[in-house]
Length: 272
Ligand code: MG
Image (cartoon, rainbow, N blue to C red):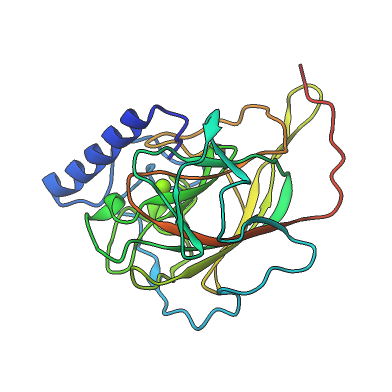
């Protein structure tokens, strides 16, 4: 979800989504726009559910970062993060950070273009809510391109909003969720979109997502930003972008966050 919207609106949409599921027994929507290049509506509940895969023991859980990694969270403090124009105020304890519901999403102070990102998350051990209301958070790039974080362990929702889904666009290839309260890993390889001097899009964003050692997306292009119930439209921006962890009012935890830049990045002159 595009959380640049006011938080109240975000929460309102979440409640609305739950109401749709409860009222008619469907998992998603059929009145939303068609996703370009597919036969499906945005958040289409009739889209096939990703096959469930029980992940093995991921080698990267709790592992020490590589020597050239930029550490974004080492379990001690939120010094690399901010929230809007102010301080990030999520709880930090016992080596993890936890979403402070209604405390706002948090963003990295630094910006990056193309990178390998590692993070670990645990959805709340106390299971509450259904569908999009259970353990919802997200990893967003520039606050507009979301890789969903959700508890989809015995919890169905519309496929393009499942754990690791490119929200509103592409469901994960499989559902590799571990149980609530268990540490899980995302290894995400992100390539930012590019525009030329005439503001023409010359490269879409592309992402590879590995969840608990299982591939969910392999260099999948995004059709644009990932707003709720809509098709996002690319608008030129600096390829160097912040990374955001979403406050969706569920106390999801994160730990061991680091990234490695991919190659050299020559900063182009942005279109005026
Ligand atoms: Mg989310």
